[in-house]
Length: 200
Image (cartoon, rainbow, N blue to C red; front, side, top):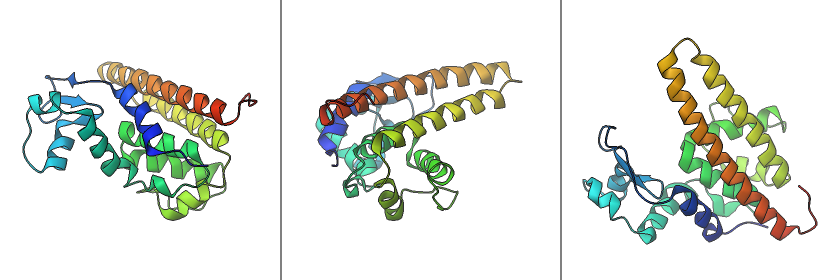
């Protein structure tokens, strides 16, 4: 059974929270709200936006943007069974970008589940969705989580010789790990509602 956009987006809005000002960053990456940066808001509205426009962004408009930019582009309505993939791809698509999560998922499908998809992982195709739909939802998430932690460790290893870069990467990975834990908590709570006797 699939999961609705409304259920998934509630989790995303809760995790992303309100406005975040990063005024040390160059415009238009200096502000975000509900996971939407100023550059994303400009692309959606088709006009230049200010930091104040981001601060004033309503949750209603944010939901419209997130649906158009991630849920619809990832074709998440087409899942029939793997509700975990819907929640995961929306959350991680926003956090890592569509192409970043597509590469990770393609790698897992090929390495763990016997897939033969192009390694570049440019997007989540209809063939990939049909393939994922046949995988037990919780097993799919466990493999994704494991692969993410391996990727995080590799990022650290790649920056061992540069203290400043390593310090920056450690901060990023701390945020990514917390985000992944929030996603796991949401998925486990949904799984308990669907399977009251499940011990995951």
